[in-house]
Image (tube, rainbow, N blue to C red):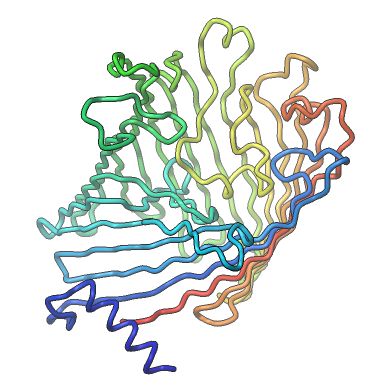
Length: 422
């Protein structure tokens, strides 16, 4: 069995490098994979569920096969991915959703300057604006050129640019906003210092707001500008992380945009095992009068992580038009690198009162998650969440006048990451 597996891996490499797959001096080739199964129980996940409907138990599978190539100045990665729901294909149905998650090549132009071109997963800071979205079974990647200037032990400066088209067209056509942005450009700066680090980003994404082929020049430009500051020092059990972003320009519908995000969290490590974190997220919102005038003051989360912020139940993945204010506290118990458990309590409110009730509170949530590393290539993760809704929750979710289940959601996830060849 071992010889068969090794022979298959060597054949795979030989097909990718027909001129000879034996790496030259200083080159490394790695082939690894990921098989991740997740089962979820949903009874009010993302929105309250009418009691005339039954909760759903659903299982999904993500499979990845990744090839890494590193020759010092030249690097490359190809990641094949299949994401599916168990049962979507029958026992005799060979249809699949196999696709390309990553495919990029990188070249070190100088000792400090590199360029990467192709489909790539990118992530910055605390994942609020740009993330690989690892919780999602499909993940998130961008077709772009990424250039990095990183002089040793000084600072990091990155520039990224993307231009999207819906197909192999002979003339310019509007790009579907639901699919993604038409164009994206960002500049990111990062610098470490004693005791912590600082980063700043400017991101511009562009949308076609006219659906006609003859008006492709009608584009809206949305700008997001801000930064992050982290203070953390070895030997001191206290750390602080702050975030501030300002959003301006025009939204995808070309309405004037004037929004902001302010966030901060503080963590205190009580011992080697126990830590406590508390924080606040403020997303600006719009009043009905402002929307009637065509103005937009609601912050957009862009291409950040949905699961890392504002609750595992994902009630506010898309922010309410009235904005969002979250206060939260998290208790963590960690046993080395093998086991950890987190308990979080989150309280949600609107930043602008709901017109129907003149109230702001929209409920609260408790999230329990645990992670256990069985072996270096096998991990087990699970969690349970409940949401305590109120009338404002029902109004925002269009669930008024209905009897609903008590909102709850749980999951178990097994991740196997084999390394086939190195």
